[in-house]
Image (cartoon, rainbow, N blue to C red; front, side, top):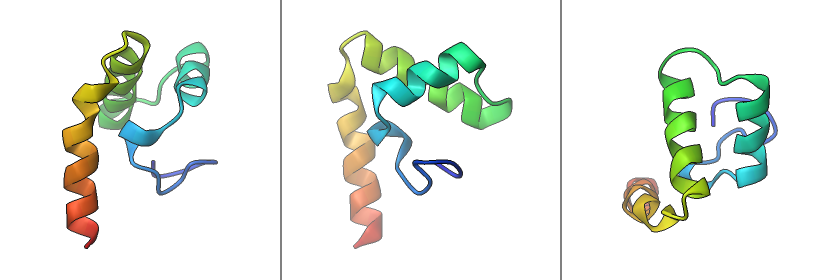
Length: 63
């Protein structure tokens, strides 16, 4: 996440309540908004395991 309370957090690791807030307030424009919307949909539909490869990839890059 490039800004806010969760700055520096991988989008896949954002808590659902934060994504719900964005959904109510309006997602940011552009690529970030699309990514946040996608993560939100994945999480609220119980498909969080689909995000694991993203988390693994990011962690490998940080090593």
